[in-house]
Amino acid sequence: MASDSTPGPFDFPSDSALRAGSSSSVTGKGEAMEERPMSLPPLALKRHIAQSNRCLAGLPDRFLDVDASRMALGFYCLSSLDVLGARETRVSKADREAWIAWIWEQQAPGGGFRPGPFSTTTGDRLGEFANDIPANDVGTASTSKPELDSDTAPGHLIMTYCALLSLAVLRAEYARLDRQGLKQFVGLCQGSDGGFSTQPLTAYPYADADLRMLYCACVICSLLEDWSCINTSAAIEFVRNCRTYEGGYAQTPGGEALGGTSYCAIAALDLLRVPLGGRERSQTIRWLMQTQQSDGGFSGRIGKISDACYCFWQVAALDILDARVETLDAEQLASYLASCQHVYGGIGKAPGEMADPYHTYLSLAVLSISPPSNGDTSWQLPQLDARINGTATTVAWARERIPLP
Image (tube, rainbow, N blue to C red; front, side):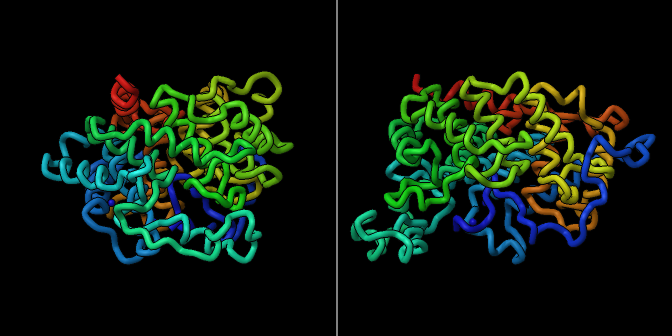
């Protein structure tokens, strides 16, 4: 359609993953933008559609390290086809049925969905922390490693989010969805501090708990129209504890503000019906806008260079805060993303980089949120629901069918 240590839909590049060098623009809107293009070249729609279909059929060997996130890769590719308006015209009935069947095969017995047809076990992951966990915290779990096959491996919170939305993109029905198991699974992923891990773990908080998982849990509860399985007050407090002095949000309390996790925080709070307001909102908008660089792109942190994926995270956050129109240079943003297009289709993280499903989808998604005024009709993409990260029609399909009748 990658292990917990490989990129998921909300994994954000680290310093080492960024291109060498640094941008001279560190204040975003405070510095002059590069000269705005008079007009944009057409968006390479056909090439991007072809690239997404190729990736769904099989990925090159350079993607081997993310094979354990197959569900997420499928989500990016399918969502790209959706936002390109090619879901019906460029997807055969046989492929659609095969993809739907594959997704349902990943539904875990205890609720939620797995990353793919392989074992991702609690025991495997606890082994990473075995030397650090006191024996009385996890009993025999730190010394034993359950041998679970693909039929009994537990669900994964991020991949569950991807599966539910991918099924909606494919216009699948949800008759096979184990809703009660899904609710129980999401609830078991929450820790006492309000945060969420990717899987239910007895070793919490040694788990990989951060705002990405909390966001996914909030989306799932919102689509179910049932929040009874989680402690919403604790979740809100966890988000607030991740807020930094600049107005952004770190992955975990005490960390550095990041663009992607700031989006997760802002979207989660909005879904929880406690949106930012007043001084907090103004401070966050200011921080987000400081990450737009002179080339029109956005960086994930102050002082870093542009990356196509952060164009989505930052602009989607601004859209949720209802601040996009008043602050954003959409034409310069589109010019930057146009320069990231690959000659054979798809979009890379920066000009000259190879295309990949992750950056392709997020680049198209941000153009759906904020289309430029100086481009032709190829730049006008279907409306996106910024809080859920899916086209409006796909999110409407999910909202109509996922809740219990």
